[in-house]
Amino acid sequence: MSESWDAVVVGAGPNGLVAALTLARAGWRVVLYEANEHPGGGARTEELTLAGFAHDVCSAIHPLGLASPALRNLGLESVGVTWIQPDAPLAHTLRPEQAVMLERSVSATAAGLGVDGKAWTRLFAPGVDAGFSLTDSVLAPLTIPPAHPIELARFARHAVRSAESLSRSQFRGELGPALLAGLSAHSVLPLSAAATAGVGMLLGTLGHSVGWPLAQGGSQTITDALAKLFIQAGGQIRCGERVSSLRQLPPARAVLCDITPRQLVALAGEQMPVRYRRSLQKFRYGPGVFKLDWALDGPVPWKDPQVARAATVHIGGTLDEVRESELAATQGRISERPFLLAAQPSLFDPTRATQGKHTFWAYCHVPHGSDVDMTHRIEAQIERFAPGFRDLILAKHAMGPAAMQAHNANYIGGDITGGVSDLRQFIARPVASVHPWATPMKGVYLCSSSTPPGGGVHGMCGSAAAELVLRHAATAQLAG
Image: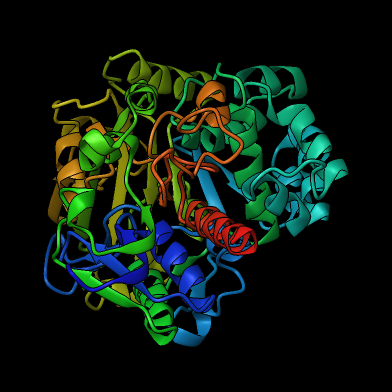
């Protein structure tokens, strides 16, 4: 690695790719190193079960692909990404015969929530009306004053609360709390934790404003599009080259690492100041996931047929049921009836399976590093809402926390979010700093989901880090 570059990026997940592309489009000579044989990180698609069945290994549904400031104006559609919008963004199975639907419109959703409809409108209509000014305020680096202070303040009034307390104070029935609980469970936190309502409100708002689309052919098409744009901008991607030390990298003005704090500590070694190393070693990783992918002989036979209108399905019942499952994962316990996040992409994208067949996946949150096989519990939970599901299984593929980390080194202990996203670690991610993407090592930056705004295929961590690099370079040039 003797050739010199303007920037070196380590890790070709969505954040690493966006960081590399941002710098390349600014005229920098950029090389990107990826340990795996293919780029993608959490956005890869593979034949996990049978030939002809395409499964998204991790991320699968992409509201942030349309809403993220880092992705929405890149021109992904011009290089192969086709977005598919299901009839409804989300179905939440409350009980076997009854699902609650998140519709594209706030009013249609409210109409299906009965006594909770007016409260849902009060909570979500302002964010939908705010459009991208809200999502940009939540996802982009905080500025003083904020770019959209009114929208941000209106959102924050409810978002800083726990999903449980917000539900109990705003809703009178069981439908609204169940739907919000499923949305908020994406935080991978107990529903009693502060700011879990914010996660649920943001995801619900996106469902209403841009939908919850999937990429035709799989999430890999998003990765391939980012890689193509980067190469078109003059960048180079070198896959199958694992970086084990920062010292082995070629000379560069900046090094951006799409890795977690634990990995950066290992790569930097004695180059890292002791105080910063100690801070990174305090960074906390959260619960893991246990995921199953199935090749099916037919569509999932839901008892409530309207579940087939959505590509994304939350399987797990009432607020109390979801709360118990999520609490168990954070307390080191296994839920006997786990709350499941599931997707049935082949209902809307026939390229995912051979003719007449289907793909389906579901995962639940489990204790960090758990080695418990959740297959029976997950399939029993699905069978509860879709009797006869097991009879359709042609093949299955399981990934627990260890397998997740083996597939993507950033998934420490199976944590797919880059570290706990509670209020404390949201503010100090990975450390308390005005510019958390920068490190005290000259020219070395973090650009992974362990930096703000956190997990998700939105590219904002990579974009923020790259923009900071460009500002630092401009300042140094002026000073020089």
